[in-house]
Length: 211
Image 1 (cartoon, one colour):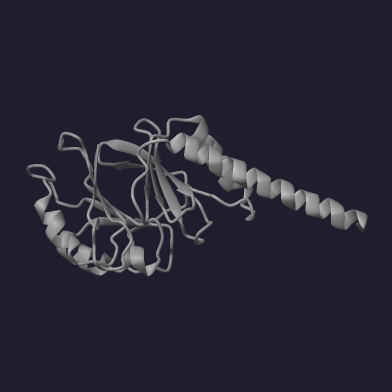
Image 2: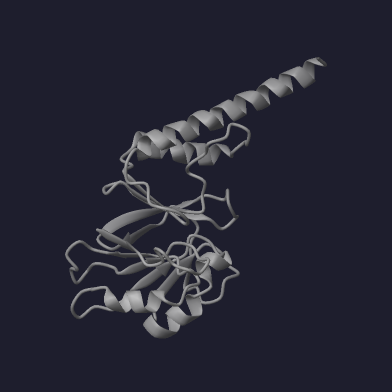
């Protein structure tokens, strides 16, 4: 699998746009954009990338959520490349298939699980390939440095699953990819979430006892 950030060094405020293709450009690989952002210069970069002989340049688009910095360019991408579009949000125009979570989608030459993570937004998803150890996180807060915020139990379970499994590379919606120490970073996040939960329980006990 090869992952290319099409918005690296962009001068426009935009989310990262990842072009994902198979390692060998095989005919059955699925050329994919994870998010489309809002910088039209990605069109030149898409056209400059080898997507494989006799293949569509972009087979599919998967949106991690519908915020403007991740989805604004969707009409132009559809017009030029005519991809199949997946998203969780039912309110976004131009989506062919609505995701519910737990689907398995082929991206490049890897199979990814769709994980609904309604933390940053109600329609946020992550995409996880166990075999490759790759996670596309969108704006889901995988790196949690504070122990002050309470997170839903299902989100904690997701991070535990990643920590227990094969997690090697994290591609966030903003900022640089995490290509080293991913497991350790998730461990720190889990520790901070548990501390936040413990603080909350302590407060409840104090308030409940009237002290």
